Image (tube, rainbow, N blue to C red; front, side):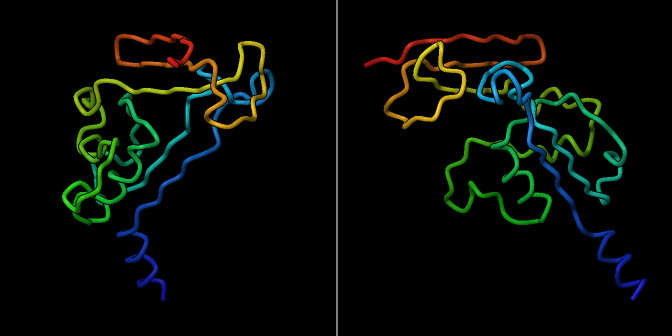
Length: 149
């Protein structure tokens, strides 16, 4: 049994994504850094260069599906006719220190009904203000715009 468990664990990836953000002032309903950062850990022991490493590669939640599919040895979802916004991050596992070319930018957006509404609970068609964040290795920019009619 012990040998079986060792073989199973050796060939298994584990992905942990945690609830992120600051919960007091804006209850994670913001585009500030504390609201958009997501703790994200993937263990893929057969990717030896990544074991115990950290990376500064940009990543978004939409990257989870293509990354996990590729790590599992499945065909790329895009070759199966699925339209995806995410990018596989498997290249980061091969060279965690030099991962700047995997994604050029990461995006986030959050809508609100007004600039005074700290805890919004509304339908999409009630959005009055949309905040956008663009993050890259060299730049972080946050803008808020009113929606176009």
